[in-house]
Amino acid sequence: MAPAQISLLLICSGTLGYLLGTFPTGYLLGRLLRGIDIREHGSGSMGATNVLRTLGKGPALVVLLTDACKGIAAVNLVRLLEISPWQVGGRSPLDGNIVTWMVVVASLGAVVGHSRPLWLRFKGGKSVATGLGILLAMSWPVALIALGIWLLSLGFSRRVSLSSLVAAATTPVIMVNLRQPLAYGLFALAAGIYVVLTHRRNIERLLEGSEPLIGQKLAPSPPAPPKADPDSTGVADQTAT
Image 1: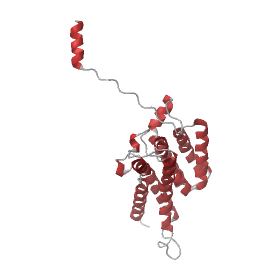
Image 2 (image 1 turned 180 degrees about the horizontal axis):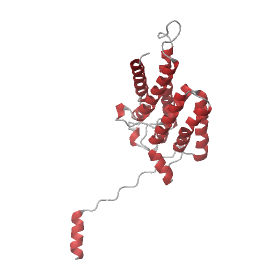
Image 3 (image 1 turned 30 degrees about the vertical axis):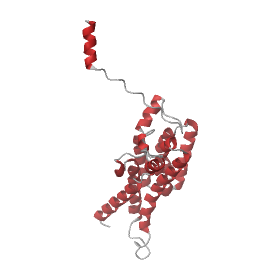
Image 4 (image 1 turned 90 degrees about the vertical axis):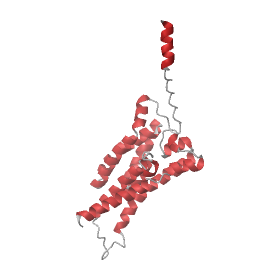
């Protein structure tokens, strides 16, 4: 297959993954159930954790499952290219290695699409549930181990953000230990770094000791101090003299 054709397939895969990732489940539920923009409440994310804090357990479960399904769909829709009607003489004209990289590009597109949806001015979630769905479709043993690490960390810390950071950091190591394809390992590394970047505010709160426990609402930000009136300041100075 010519390089131009491969490039086109990779671009199409990334676009497909991005569009799937942009489906704003948390945002839509906020509008439907409360008439609110979920991104204006709590942590400002439209992911399952913020939906749990703002809308409750039921909507949070719907968001978690739907966001994970976006990742599963991104992987499996690309893998369908290895199946008829593309098959010629019982075999796919696409090299298996090409399909693997198409899966990786589509997966990265889904991760970015969830956190930076075009339709919502590039403000979305943090891509953790979508990443879990991708891992389930890529390699379910890796996904189950990563989920186990996430649950173990959550049990000790009671903080979803910290658990997500730990799982994101350890997933590339799991990929290597389970001898997954190099492309999958590179995806885990790139997606892990991206997830850490989407948690910048959470990391700041963790360092400050103000990150809320699971289900606990964020403490409101302290009000900004009132600005001094320059006219009144001038009058006060004249009075003092």
